[in-house]
Length: 262
Ligand SMILES: C[S@@+](CC[C@H](N)C(=O)[O-])C[C@H]1O[C@@H](n2cnc3c(N)ncnc32)[C@H](O)[C@@H]1O
Image (cartoon, rainbow, N blue to C red; front, side, top):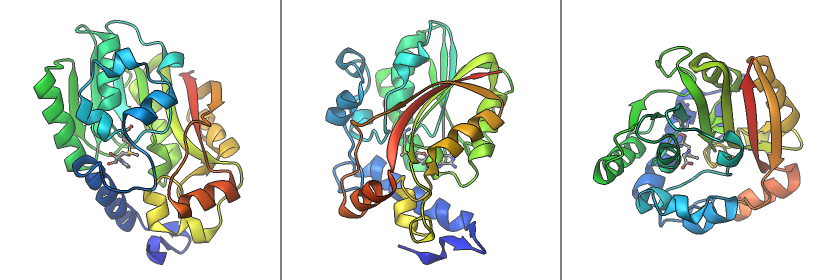
């Protein structure tokens, strides 16, 4: 825990990045360890992933799956489409997307944590998913080309960013007109107090940086999207005592959402 996460009420980006990288390095390397959140196949199926899709992706990517919901049903990817995954982790969603867009499509996973990228790349090479690539970059500044993608996806990641508008603006820049943003993320019903937003461990565990839900939707709209679907994911729950207390007190919860670039 650190109370230095904020200085002058602004998030200390360097400290936040270190905490987030440390947590997701462990998620990649030691998925069997204890975390504030659940991971793995049982959770993925409970969230809505279809067993027949999970059977087609590397099992090690499922063990390190740290997403918070299922959005592929509303996204409805088609063969040959191009997809960017913001915060791709160990790659499970990039592989699920790759199966759906087929050999003529392309999926690019973007992440900042080396161990997540190395694991996803190794698994991609072992299984031979030639339509998947990875890029080390920040999700608010991917360096990918403008207006080239049919979909941007993200699972459990935007809550970790201190500037969520910048992330949604980047998702908007990447998409073609009419392109889809589909994501699952953690939001709150009430605004979180400082003692939670200053707690770096809770931030890295996807709680401290969670935005109030109405503000979250307005931020996506401010980036130039029409938000066409929002659903709660009651199947997702945190597991540590600290995380459970915060979720019960402030209505911290998972949602899935679909938005269209105007
Ligand atoms: C909760 S995990 C989710 C990973 C993946 N989407 C999944 O479902 O398993 C968050 C991931 O986002 C990455 N991440 C967090 N903030 C980031 C940022 N600002 N830029 C790039 N990657 C980021 C972390 O390295 C981590 O791999």
